[in-house]
Amino acid sequence: MTKDELVIYYNEPDEKVYVKVPPGIETQYQLSNLSGKILQEGIHEKALHDFDLAGLPEGIYFVIVNQDDVIRSKKIIKNS
Image (cartoon, rainbow, N blue to C red; front, side, top):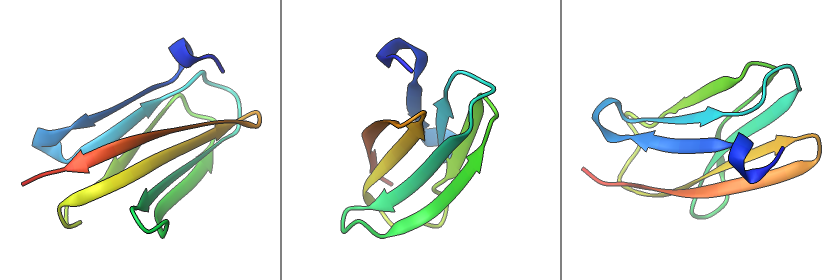
């Protein structure tokens, strides 16, 4: 997985973080808070995954994606 093959973006209006990766490869997804607590996680081979931030307080979150032992992360800032 190269940097160009991974897209992580936060869509504020629907309060979701979308993760796009190359399909067909088992990928682990995690959403954690600033203290490192895992809030949501999933494992599958789909090209698109989303995390729903609705109901979570304002703050800083991290999306961690692990595909073929390549780990990428992105900081997400949730505001009101």
